[in-house]
Every structure is written in structure tokens, then in C-alpha cells.
Length: 228
Image (cartoon, rainbow, N blue to C red; front, side, top):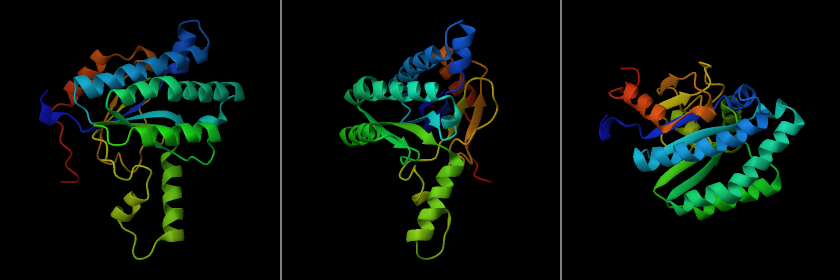
């Protein structure tokens, strides 16, 4: 695995927290708490050990609101905890934070936390993108509505990209999904058009830096041909 073959941007669909909790004879929420620890560990490994510049984590989809009210409340509280404790530590380690997703349904206190973290981390070397209340179809719909409302002139790929949540970010070269489901579930649908996809049966709380490295090794030499 050479530095030149490493992907610039990796996206991870962190699936399997609830199943991990049930498997361990614990409650499902315990799996989410463990998943947060793994997310922080993998982010540090990707940035500092492997030199990945951009990492996007699928934290909460726009469809996750359909889960029980208790679970959603617990997930939002867990995100508050991450914003207050985990994420500021990453900023101190030269990591920029960026949030994508529809912020309209996010509570005001979480919205303010996100805004503050993005402002405080501007200009850092590495970029951690957190997808919260995100769905690929929803993102495209919001982009087209914005273009219809404010746009002038023809619509092309560049125009669409400029209206996506990920404006200014490179498209992912590699997407990893844990938990055994071989699908994207709405994750970066536009941006992942030429990404290499890797699926693992490992549940997210069991995912390790060693498995991350094995996937990078398998991806070594993969080239995005963009239709050629």
C-alpha cells in the first residue's frame, strides 16, 4: 500500500450498533455508545496513521426519525455528548469538522453546537464530515429546490455539485459499510458515483483499525476510471 494509492476521501456507513447491543445481551443503546468510541478511534487512525485527508461518517439518516422516540432521543443526547466532549478533542488534534444533512429538523441547541464546532475548527489539516439527518435523495431534492429558487442559466453537473451539502469537498474514493448489508442506504448517492465500495459483515462496534487497514490494502491499486 503506497501513499499515492491511498484514497483522499473515505466514507463509512457505520451499521450494526443495535445488533451488537443485542448480541452482547445488552440494550441497543449501549451499541450506539460503543459505536461512538469506535468512530473516534477510527477517525484518529485514518487521519494520523494513514494520512487520509477527508473522512465522512454516516451518523444519523433522515429515515432514522422513524425509530422509537426513546431511541431517537437517546441518539440526540449522544450527539450532544459528542459535540461537548469528543469532537472538541479532535479539533485540538488539527481536525476540521463539517456537518452535512438537513438542519431544519435539528433542535436549536444541537444546531448551535454544530455551527460553533465548524467555526472553531476552520483551517485545520484533516476534515471529519459527519452526516446528521442526512439522506442522499433528500440532499438532491433540496439542491434542486435551491436551484429552482435562486438559479439562473443552464443546470449542469457543476451547478448541481455547488448546491449539495458537500460543496467544496472532494468526492469519496472509497466507501466502507459495516454490518453486512451490501447497499448504500442513501449515503452520498451523487458523490459516490465512481467510488469503490467495500462491505464487511463486522458490526460497527467490532470494527478495528486492523480491518480498516486490510480494506485499504484490498483497495490498493484501484483506479477511478470515470467511464473510461
